[in-house]
Amino acid sequence: MKNRAIVILLAIALAVCCFALALGTTYGLYHETVSSQTHLVAGTLKATLVRHKLTTVNLGEGGEFVRTVDDAEKDFSTNTQDNIFGITQGTVVAPTSSFTVEMCIGNSGDVAFSYYVEVVCNSVISDTTFASMLKVSVQPERGEKREMLVSDGLNLGGENDALGTVEAGGAENFTVTLEFLDDANNNRVESKFVMFDLCIHAVQNVSA
Figure 1 (cartoon, helix red, strand yellow):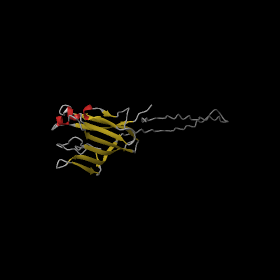
Figure 2: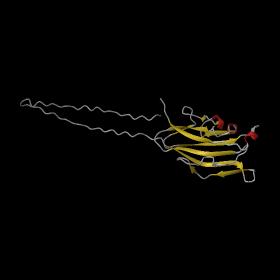
Figure 3: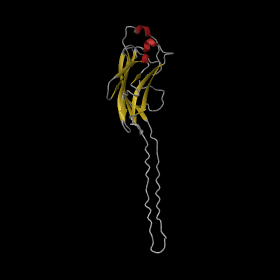
Figure 4: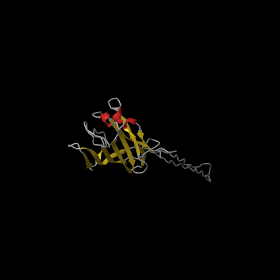
């Protein structure tokens, strides 16, 4: 719900008492003044993002597929050169390679927010055929699974179609998976390169 600061002005009616004295027309007025101060503080929208677990199925040193699990928590709340999939420059993948991360998005601010995922592919330097074989899927804690190809360059969810909602002080888990699809044209992308960003958006909840 959209935060709204409401200022209530209290009008205090002061009763003025007039007393007619027995002698003459002198009268006294009793006055009272009430001072009211109102302080407003703008709320904050502050999202935290932590990876709880990374499961990788990818080529080992001998070229065979190896499954590895990293369950060390890693904070992605601030700017970092790392990515949630643990992929470094020069990482080699093959059809059916996959990277699955279990994430937690938390709300340490004052404003409830909804969140969604955006995939941004650098089409200038990336091979578009290879990008069309990479699928990103998101499974929120509550709700339906969303998926798209990296080449689509679309959002998984949106401001009006959120993956989930996180109240102030709350948190929600979700899973993101990157897969290299088994495709009849896999041979066409040997030694090709793809560069893309995965962005998590937190947007203030607004309702009429």
